Image (cartoon, rainbow, N blue to C red; front, side):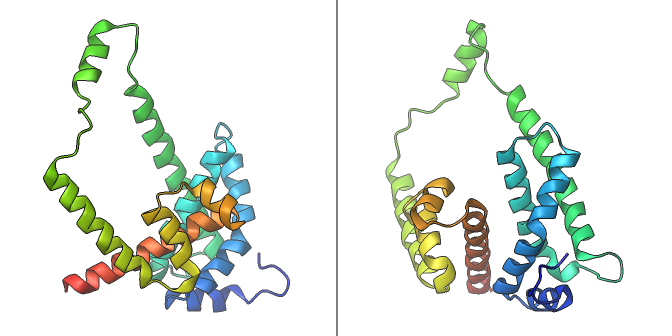
Length: 197
């Protein structure tokens, strides 16, 4: 449901489909509360961190797939909740797989296998060159981003700050930070794809 004073959903969708990030942010603001409540109701065992993560991933998927949205088949909120439901299931399955891979310290054999599979952490000269080239390329892409995303993308992709640190430093909501970083990454991916063509 649209908030009072906001633009109609149809207009926001039309703008989002042509790549208007501000319109998509307004869609986020309009639907995040109901989406969060839906996930909490459907997945009662998830804590707030996972709920927020699923919301962010769902909006990211919706942003990437917005051109495939068909308003004649469902309302945007319903479409978004379907994406969120599937994302929640994927997240829970992925988390369960990770938990199964934990090493038990009660078994010497398992500990030995785990320690033998861990590298010594030293970087080879080739890895160092590749890392430096990637860093220079990333800095170039970040500098080409719109002002709205540039500073936050620099903090995450170049300075290596965590989402929570960025939120605290900028005073932005954690979900806003996540959304802007994902959009920045999407824009960088588009630039990379255009360069390769």
